[in-house]
Length: 260
Image (tube, rainbow, N blue to C red; front, side, top):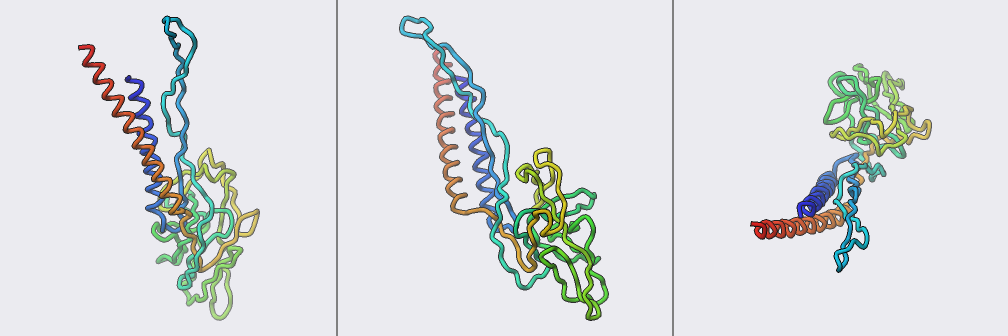
């Protein structure tokens, strides 16, 4: 019966992880640029045992399962709804594939679909909430009466200075052979991994990259109805695993009592 307890325990662990996934997705329903994720599972190696007949002779083999384990976590990078934010020209949404490139303070590169940007005290365009620089090369708004901050669909950033348009940079993007392999960092950010492959850098509307839309923001891609249904299913799975564990524990106790 110890094997039965271990098998039921794996079901509890897996179903608990599935519940956490669904709960986290629902918690981020209104998080801009959030991408839903879900754990995947696989059945553990089976063991083969001999089966006895009525005359106690071996009459064949039977395979017994050993439970379930988590094989990995995959992200769903399908686009979220793009909504207009008329009052904030630093908000930018990606229409199509690709990620914004973000430079962290230690110089490492991260990637995001969340285009909530702002100007910091030095005039640099940075990511809201983190203050991390947008792009590998800083885009700096000159401190000389610059107006009419504009981002074109191809990522070109310009301002108006002394009634003349001045280009000050261009939004940088990246894409991956397998975006699902990206590692989550939190704060809307991802980083490359062996699973994702190396980043392919380009500007918007180049090399199959999407375009960008100023005054827009991409919302979460979490479907509340599907997430609630999944959470309900995971909860049922958890209850079944718990009952199996409880039954196994009771039988184990009775066997122990019988041996005394």
